[in-house]
Amino acid sequence: MCGIVGAVAERPVNKILVEGLKRLEYRGYDSAGVALCNAGELSSVKAVGKVVNLEQALNESDVKGTTGIAHTRWATHGGVTEANAHPHLSNNQLALVHNGIIENHDKLRTQLKAAGYEFLSDTDTEVMVHTIHQLRQNSDSLLAAVQQAVKLFEGAYGTVIFDKANQDEIIVARSGSPLVIGLGLGENFIASDQLALLAVTRSFIFLEEGDVARVTRETVEIFDANGVAVEREVHESNITQDNSGKGDYRHYMLKEIYEQPVAVRNTLEGRLTDNGVALDAFGSFSDGSNQNKNANDIFKDVKHVQIIACGTSYHSGMVARYWLEQYAGVSCNVEIASEFRYRSSYVHPNSLLVTISQSGETADTLAALRLAKEQGYMASMTICNVAGSSLVRESDLAFMTKAGAEIGVASTKAFTTQLVGLLMLTAAIAQEKGLEQSHIVHAIKTLPNKLEEALGLAESIEDLAEEFADKHHALFLGRGSQYPIAMEGALKLKEISYIHAEAYAAGELKHGPLALIDADMPIIVVAPNNELLEKLKSNVEEVRARGGIIYVFADSDSEFKSDDTMRAVNVNHVDDIIAPVVYTIPLQLLSYYVAVIKGTDVDQPRNLAKSVTVE
Ligand code: G6P
Image 1 (cartoon, rainbow, N blue to C red):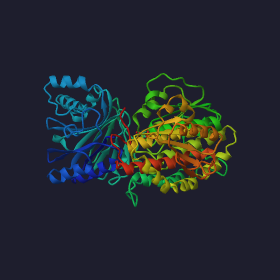
Image 2 (cartoon, rainbow, N blue to C red):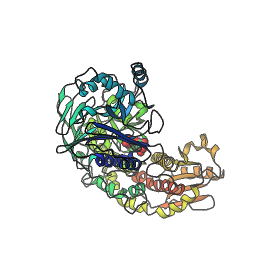
Image 3 (cartoon, rainbow, N blue to C red):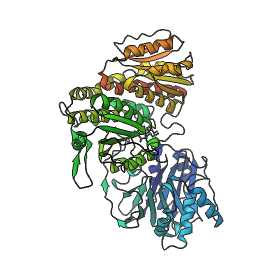
Image 4 (cartoon, rainbow, N blue to C red):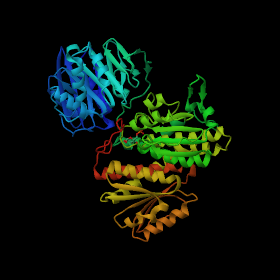
């Protein structure tokens, strides 16, 4: 999704801005632009498509500057055109970039047009720069104009603006879309994600909701939503930006699929005892009465878990429902964040709220967390892959997955490490309630090796993928905790191969989807050997009897055999508890190889973004 980079320095910042945008490319975008100021001269260069197009256009121009802002745009209002790309200018005086959506843009545009402002784009963003320009006419400073303007904006924004008349300062404002200030020596930087700035600094200030800041080469002044000057903590980042590129892998996604045994090992490291879970993995917090609370204070009393997430993270939550109810003796609801945030939900007594997110910045999940914090949950907890992200900062407890930077838009290793975090949460709650949980811990410990074994299936799955290349639809089936894995498999196939795919709980087949079965509809079945296997086999026979072709990923001792209507891929036997994690691997590989055969943009599929910071 949209990315922002800004810099105010003594040296030319062209390269810093372009490098920063490149580091944000993986998030998904469709055009890019930069505005630079040099000796009071404001220039802007934009390009549709990849950042390399912008880089080329910038290199071919003689535009350079010591103050600058840059942006990758993921279109929401207005098509993918140079005119709609950011930065947007007002009267060739102010330049502004924006992440988020201004919901009252129509009303503001009408007023601004009546006041004589000319609009050059179809974006909601352009109203921001003209509004600030208009207010600047009667205010003492750009800072004051921005502070007044944000009161008029409804919606979400992370925005960065400068005035060519005073190029030594940049003003930034955050509400709903993250912004971070990077501190340098005699130069300072701004970005929507610290990853963009790792080449120039490791010291970061995360702006909070409602903050407006004035950033110069030497100083950073921050004001909260009431205009009161505030100090925000400086964080030293220890994130290691993965600079090793794709290595020998053709795509980041394939590299990340293969990194899963290591990512899971890292997520487990130091967090399991011989028979239990080390609870400090979940952190601690101070409650309203300044009492320090640890995870065990919550886990021993919890009776219900409410999980909220989006996309792939939602699927990991769906798996956790099976685990929590079966092994930890608590009830569990799982809901998509965009639904949860707009309805009145019932809060069960002794409920723990759990958000799951690889990015920690998903707008709907964050909004749902903020809403839920008003509703009387015992505590909030996030399972997240990005330290310092909004969800981590705003939740009471946090379990950090250690998947490392995930570049491919389609989530792989972030998902399996979320599952590990949720399995550890299950074991930890069971442990604090005095329930038997050592079998879960022992099963978790086998995971890295079991994932390695599952990766050994790649070659046979690559062969199978050929049969999908000309298909337009696919159906994924699973039962029990494999049903959400079937959903995740279908999502992966949709995301990167653009084949329409649906997932069903296999028991639902005869209630509708059976009508779709014919030789053109591949049916993918995940079939570990558990108490539901015989039921699943009956479902498979229902499909075969109607001419469907089955692709089954089955436990090696479950006796599925390949024939004319069935392709069976044997997966080594694994404990049922960890089977959802292991069976994810063949489905990821299948989607990957189908996408490669179809020639799609595997790492940056069309229309999708890695981090969805707008509603
Ligand atoms: C986007 C990404 C998905 C991700 C979803 C939720 O759609 O492309 O891979 O599952 O957002 O993101 P989160 O960061 O909250 O897990």
